[in-house]
Length: 302
Image (cartoon, rainbow, N blue to C red; front, side):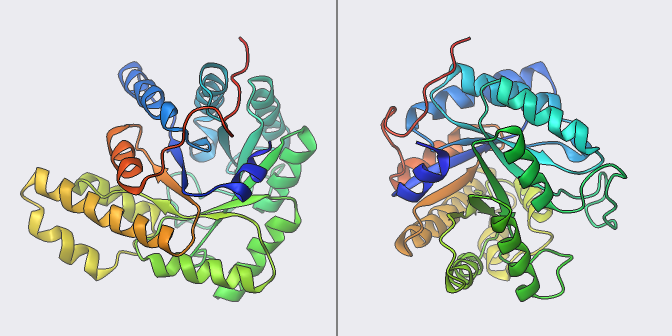
């Protein structure tokens, strides 16, 4: 089955995200995480793409290795930042040659400063829907896109942002992953507004356990600084106790995951930060493990 078919039929499942490693030690630790999480049966493993395409070789390499060496379906991120269309087409071709059939198409943020004005490459793309069409034309089996529960920072209002998301679906996107938010209600409101348009495209929420002050800094970048006051009330008392901070951060993530599942959300997208332990804990607490086989894909023969 295709990834979109898997997502439509999924119940109480998870996906996981990795980022290309920049040194051998991190790469080794990352691959150990892949090997530990694969037996839990993620629906897919997404692999991020560096700003300006800087990590594109690492993305192709890691996604292709997952396709070749595990039963997990890789989904490679692809962004339009700083790259001409012919270079982006070549990246898609390289992914397909490596056994990667699915892509997450993102316009991306300006290299070095996410808040800087967006300027497309002169021979590149202005919007993510153009990337969706490119990937499908080159032969991708399915293409996902980003969704923004709080609205994209450049959108003037929620209705405009929703129209842009629907435009990406009209271009051929078959699923969407929502930007990280710590208020479950933000995601549920987006899901309900999308459903009200008649769309049934699968929408996945992102879930990241805030297990250290460093991870909290990461979340500030991922959420564009949107941090609910209740999160600080939960975590601030433990800033000087590393173990207690991690326990409380995991407790918050489990509570959010249970709420999402209770609201009928079938698949949770878990950010690994290239480590396995937090994802393993969440999968266990939330009952998301799935026996290998089933809807997992068969590895490509080297």
